[in-house]
Length: 230
Length: 268
Image (cartoon, rainbow over all chains, first blue to last red; front, side):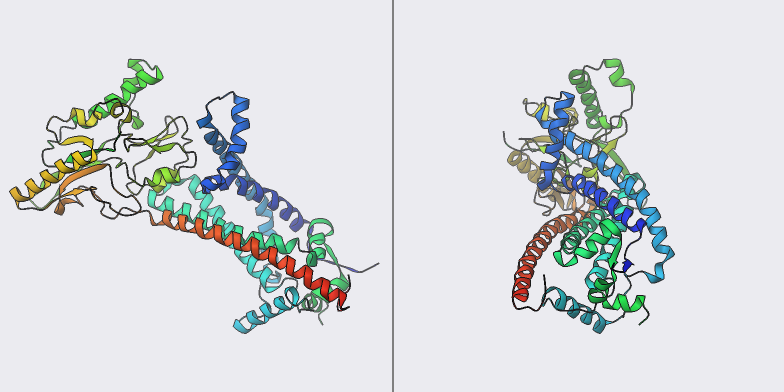
């Protein structure tokens, strides 16, 4: 039987699963408020609501949908806060050993990291990766910063009476811009997470939490060396 | 029906506030008329959302030349109405006469309109949990009547009508005041102010030197809301690029992998 290496602990897997469905609820419920292009989501929700409540006025459908989606948005945001607290504490506990820190600092190290990514994803050749490659580290930072900005601005908007209208509009812009950046990074994150080349990492995150040692040795050689202090 | 605009002339205004009072009276009559609320109930509460004209009195100049100025805070019924643009439920719309109105039945009280308005006009009422602002008495105007504030004015400091008619009269008055007093008078809002708000449907005749005292913003804007709009367009393009890019990469990767397997460089 192949020797296993723990890639993710149970808390990380639990948090990631809940993060996915709460983010899905937050995105679906937030999009129609962000842009009229996504009004179809609100109509999709508003039509059954109006049917169940017996409200026959068609101009109320969008408002019914948005009202319901606002409740979903606020509830999901609140649940995400609850879910994120233990995760933050667990990350803070091992902050110095997290994989999101660069192995080496500087421009040359970043260029080398990008060259390794090109080798792996463009040339399909062996690349020297740690537990996370430079793209994963960058996206993890962007996602963490954007999520923090979204949560802080989201809670601030709940108490907007404390701010001037000018400040409230600035907070609203921060909320929207953070989401837009996060959404673009999420598309790339989801693509690489479900990419056939990353089957082992996907299985580790969603099923076992572990990876075969042989796989780690071949695909995450720098991590393997670090684990075995080679 | 053509676009109807209102004009407030600061010179003949005697600060009697009849406009403000008639506005509130008309709103209370609407409560009785449309919501079948009895007269006693409709007049006994000081409901903020039944007042759309707020006077802001300031004193300008230094004694003995000091004088009082009463600025009115009200909806300007912007041509490009940022409140309407941001409203997620479509509760804000522009009527055929140009009045920007909030449909209370559809408003969900999200306060987005307040964030977008550069004049800080739409307010949230805690009594009915809706946003409220002047609706330009569109119901009266569409039935051939004047707005309640205009009707109440005893000195013709407020007048309204089709755009050309009102602009001609406003420009005539501004020219007359300029030639009579030697101070330059302008018609604020008559010309497009900027792309954010466009032209205004509530214009004001005012000495150019008193624009700030009358709280008439010459560059009304909500920069953050514009950033948000740019980000929406840019974000859409970036998201589309990300989807196309990742799909293209997957096709490329599968093809390259197939070739590498065929060449024996990698194994399935």
